[in-house]
Image (cartoon, rainbow, N blue to C red):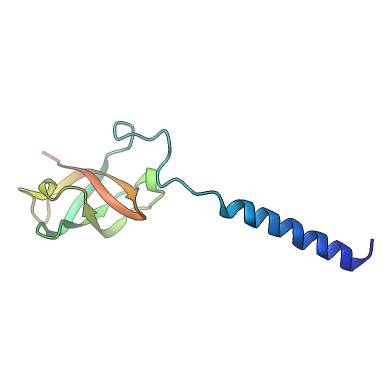
Length: 111
């Protein structure tokens, strides 16, 4: 086989793999994950916008999202979760990927 045939075969093989991969979709969360098995993560409220349903949290690692600890803003699944909270409060929360965004799905003050 000459070099031209080898390169053509390699390109065709790569194209077939790429075409096959395009038909697959990645799940937005692990199939076996449920709210009961997702970890509660320690956090501290840095900013709140209850009307917009936004909270900025300084948080530890979020294992189910493969996210290291940092300070970042999140939307909350339900604005009512922010009722009674204030900047500086310690919380425990769950977050999951929903439509490509990390969303807080559970938020509880630490007493």
